[in-house]
Image (cartoon, rainbow, N blue to C red):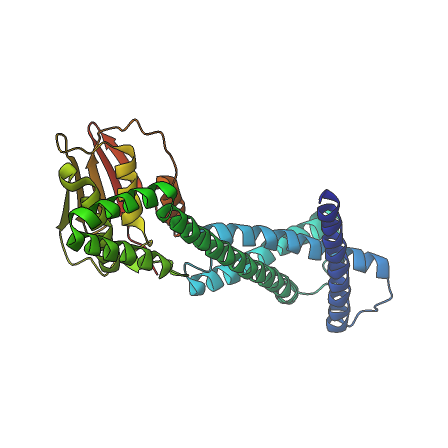
Length: 342
């Protein structure tokens, strides 16, 4: 791998040197045509001088590109970026012209007689520098596009992995074992509830399977699917927990990552004790900026850590540029889930 990277860098350096030398030669031919000079007179000196100018412009343009990519990327404002490119191009050309004039007239003591005017040299400098900056911008653009495509594919893989892990969490042996135990009891004790339990379990699995390649769902869809999960938990725990949903506005068309609510509630039941003597209180608040899931802390001695867990949800929201806020205040555990884009 190191040999491949080293070889790649050597190739890049060779391409840069060759292309910049070829460009310097073209600029030398152009300047000789404009100034009507003899091309072969001091050919090596002329080529060296033009090559130094081209290399200096390359370094200056690259520094400008790095600065603009950091402080004014195209994603912020394309028009401002183009204006900044043009201003930087003018500034670089003027600066280099002043430096080279100082070296020619004050250090090398070459008389100005017969040399082109400031306007001509500035025009030649702009004509020389503009293609260099344009090439750098195009290289950066295409590399950014490739990186964006690679990031998009990575995000898709992460989403598919998340969905796969979520499905595994839903059909893990403990969940399935507990659900079947409840169903078996209900068949004998309350056949009507057994039928409802079976339908709720079916809806819960159907929702998971329907999320193929969906990276976001509406809060309304998520809460509708959550009803089936809550019904299953009510059949299992009966009066051992309370569940409330509070809505502070019409925010149910906002979107979140699929299965967020169900996985957070699974996390609550997994890590806390719920009994009729000490019911576990759970509240969901659908707010303007977040959906908040809050529960009492009644630690369970259960050491089973299987399932998705909070860390998987955090990773999914980070992929969308959002952060889940987790607060542990005394006897309350609070998770604030931000809304995401489609």
